Length: 367
Image (cartoon, rainbow, N blue to C red; front, side, top):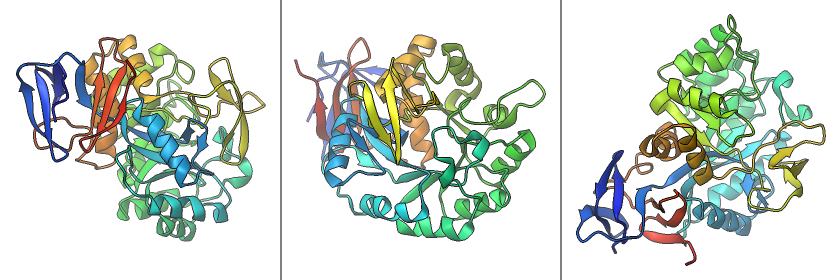
């Protein structure tokens, strides 16, 4: 199989020529004659998504996951980490068990589950139901991890027992991300030193950055081991805020969508876990006006970052390489000979023409 592309972004550098795929892997790049069907780039990885295309991952069934994966393929995503928002402890079991039973069928892969909560600071609940927030509880955390493929957890490390929970989860191989937190700089440093590896959505739903109190955002931007996740949709962050965070974090900057089931749908009422949210004027909000996820897709996030000032290679890294490294997935976020063929093909306007997962075409744009 040859992709028919004019060029490929190989380890961050453009290589003129086509891409050849055999048995699900890239075997050659720079193949002549070159095709004319756009540029191949590493397929995108969304590490924080609550839903899409009318599917909410807290409430989804297997068919819902299939519809969501099809919608994600259209945005160049080859792998995603469904997010489960803070819920009553008994409500985690079924969605976690479902993800553990899903089969791979040529669509974007589920790369484990992100639990956003329930160990969050009530002052920074954001769209999470405050009634479902709990103090750090090692037994509950262990039970949640045993119930399904938990690969990431967002928590507030300054809560009593928070650092112990960071250490426990890190020892289990779960990525700890800091968010919905009132941590000051000292607490944030302590959490990163204890094993935390990311901030969940910089400048959103955490202690605000002040000149003499930079909080978790200020620490994440300068800590060499912290991945800086950001929702670059023009709603959650001003363009200058997004681009400034990108310039500071450099290769640690990671695009996420935080999309909800309303992404790709008409304005109206939708779900975010057990809560009702409203979509209007390009934003998702609770009835009281609080932002509640986004309508963003990864290809648009990548284009927004380019529009802000990033070059294409760095924007693609933020959408593919950075989240793959955060999740310790060496099979994702790369395009080179010998790597699995997880690829998005972009046109001159950086829109997705095709998405290939394990060498199988998951999406092709209509002519």
